[in-house]
Each structure stands twice: as structure tokens, then as C-alpha cells.
Length: 325
Ligand SMILES: Cc1cc2nc3c(=O)[nH]c(=O)nc-3n(C[C@H](O)[C@H](O)[C@H](O)COP(=O)(O)OP(=O)(O)OC[C@H]3O[C@@H](n4cnc5c(N)ncnc54)[C@H](O)[C@@H]3O)c2cc1C
Image 1 (cartoon, rainbow, N blue to C red):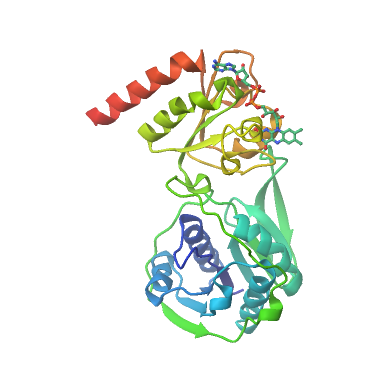
Image 2: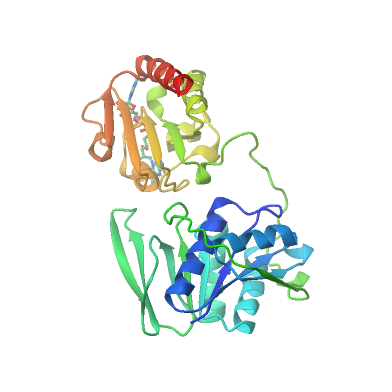
């Protein structure tokens, strides 16, 4: 079975999740005694394309079409499906990011492929089948899916697979003429970029707060701690609903799903809808005045205390530790 990985780019650059997908595809190809090729869409320089060689990708197919610079799921699915068909790929890998979530089902339909969305481990190769482990029920359990179709699509949950470096020589093939204006079923009218912040989906450390912070005027305490740690900031749903914080910080079932190495939850009760987006975090610290708060049931460390007293002390302690190390 040959493997093709769709590597998403943002303004011509790859992010960590993209390298993870490339590395995962290369490892899967090695397990299948095959090779992995990558497909990238839009204006990506040859130098950037070649950077995938560090993670074992020997061939990069660049669909160098300016039409594809702004992601549009229908047109992107058509382009990736065409590359997959022409290269005879039997497994297509992508990252389970916002882009991947929009692309994967469309791609699966075009390739008449079984789809496993949100894989968290390398699949087991079982003859012509792939057994893929993914999380279910808001990270409360795992399911092993057996993909039996001739072509298979697997999307990888970001931050769940360790990058494996395996430098290989890369050949770059440029393709054009795949996308046409009629492929676009939606038009991106405006893009508002969040600037000057660590993107939540890529953050390894996250400081998050809820209604326990009482109001937006107290958020400087959360931001100070995040700054000291080099962490991204997040919040619970009511906090963004009340416009205390922007919606791009809202995590949970109806917000962003994250899997950082450290998640600090301050004044957040730990409702199931919130936990759905954060319970995959590697280490969870909860700070809450209520010792019965549900967050303590899943937290690795808990501080029963008033955030207004705990946060300055924690910030001071981390600042001193960082200064001394
Ligand atoms: C369909 C649906 C989808 C939802 N999706 C989401 C979602 O994606 N994300 C999400 O977050 N929620 C979601 N919710 C809402 C969710 O059910 C909870 O209502 C919400 O998470 C509660 O937010 P909170 O913990 O900030 O507030 P609260 O429930 O009000 O909890 C505040 C906490 O702060 C503590 N506290 C108070 N004062 C202090 C202090 N001084 N110091 C320390 N601790 C203090 C309290 O003990 C309490 O535990 C959803 C709900 C529904 C029905």
C-alpha cells in the first residue's frame, strides 16, 4: 500500500501539526514496506516543500495554483483526490485540524474510501486492512476501526503523535491545471487573523479560566501567569459568551479541542462539555474554591483555593524558578 499525506500550509509555511502528519505517514509507509509522498496546495516554496524530507517524505507534489492559496474545502478535496488517484495512493493521511476536518469526509467520498477521523496511534497493518485507534465519547474511550476499503483516509489528532526525524532526499514535482474557478462552492470573504498570541491548537502549555474569575477586569492575572510560563490562554464557554474573552479562546465540546502537555484550569467547574475539549491534556492542574468541583476528579494536581490569592503566588513562584534556571 502506498501512502500520500496532505500537508496543510498557512501562507506558505508548515506548522507543527503538518510535520506530525508527514512523520506519521512516513512511519506508516515504513511499516507497510512502502514510501510516503506528500501533496501541498497553493504557493509553497521549494525550500519549504523540501523541509518535509526531515521527517521521511521522499517526494512532494506541489499543486502550485494561486487559486488554492486560500483554503476552500470543495476545491481542495478535488485537487487532493486527483493527486491521490494519479499517484495510486492507497492510504491518504491528513491532520485532524479545522482544515482536515473539512477536507477528510469530502476526500473519502471522492475516493470511495473508509475514513478514520482523529487517529491517536500508528495504525496496525493487517493484510489489506488498517486497524486505526481513535478516541470516542469526548476522549472517554478508544475505538479500533478496521478500514477495509481499497483506499483509506486517516486523519491524525494534532499533538498525539511524536515527531520522528528520518532525513531523506526529497524530489519535488510541480503540478498545475488541477483547480478551476468552478470547483469553488464557497468564497472566503474575509479572514480575521489573531495576532500576537500563541495559537491555542499548537500550544504545549495552556492557562485557562472560567466564571470563577468574576469579570474581564481580572484577566490580567491569567495573562500574567500565561506570559510567565510562555503559555496560550483559553476560557470556558460562558466566559466567551459574555464577551469577557474572544471566542477563539473558547475550549470544549462546542469550542476548540486541545491536547497540550499542561492545562491549568482556574475557576472552571469542569462541566462535561468543557472537559470534552481538554481531557486529552497530558497534565491537568485545577484551581477552585470548591473542593467538590468536578474538575478535581480528572485533574493530576489540584489546588483548593481562591484564584485571587493563588494566582499571584503561583506567578511569583514560576518567575523565580525561571530566573534561577
Ligand atoms: C450543549 C452545550 C455545549 C456546551 N459547550 C461548552 C464548551 O464547549 N465549553 C465550556 O466551557 N462549556 C460548555 N458548555 C457549558 C458548560 O455546561 C458549563 O456551563 C460551563 O463550562 C461552566 O463554565 P465555568 O466553569 O466557567 O462556570 P461555572 O460553572 O459558573 O463555574 C465556576 C467555577 O469557579 C469556581 N470559583 C468561583 N470563584 C472562584 C475563585 N475565586 N477562585 C477559584 N475558583 C472559583 C466555582 O467553584 C466554580 O466551580 C456547554 C453547555 C451545553 C449545554
